[in-house]
Image (cartoon, rainbow, N blue to C red; front, side, top):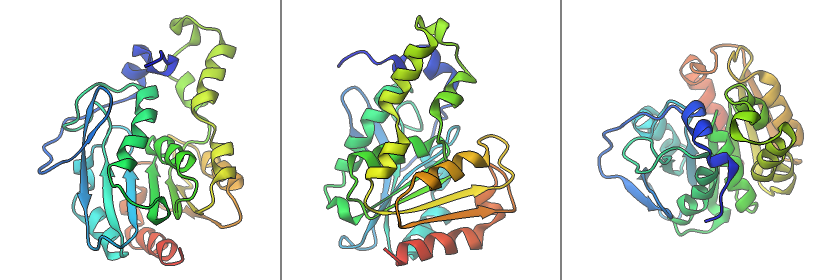
Length: 250
């Protein structure tokens, strides 16, 4: 495995906030040097499957219950993806390897990419967009409170000099692993972008930029209630109505 600047311990230690979990009956995904404790819920093997990548400081356990129930009610199977070092997963958070883990997570389902919907919340948007890059033929992509500029977010936590590189080298390393504009340009499926107008952690302009980069089949939903961490429950019925309408139209 080649060395990736995004796997630097300072990035992993400052950018990620892993929590432990007590997940029952995990859907295990084996990666090169980690085992991810995901959670799979199926209503029909022939149905579309939504793969959900949660936010920072969250774990799969947080989405068991109402979230999964609502996704199943939309007629989709649901895979809650976990990250290395989070929940019951082994390993430690390393951004480059977490990007690499996306392929193994999707491949664990062994299904037609055209039957997949990727859903990323906050930090999870990085991995949903990576899934869209790897599988541009997927049916849909949902980004909630998502990140359009990863470099901006990382520079809030680390200084390139601490990593032993110049600002230009750091920017190039980030761009090499995360180019959402290109990923969205190449994506064949439909796009739904959800954001709170009052998101104080990831500003609304990130969501608006991701929407602008999307293809012809795209929707932008800006909620007037809630913030970065309360957007779902502050808008519960309308939130899942939006998701349900999106899935039904695929």
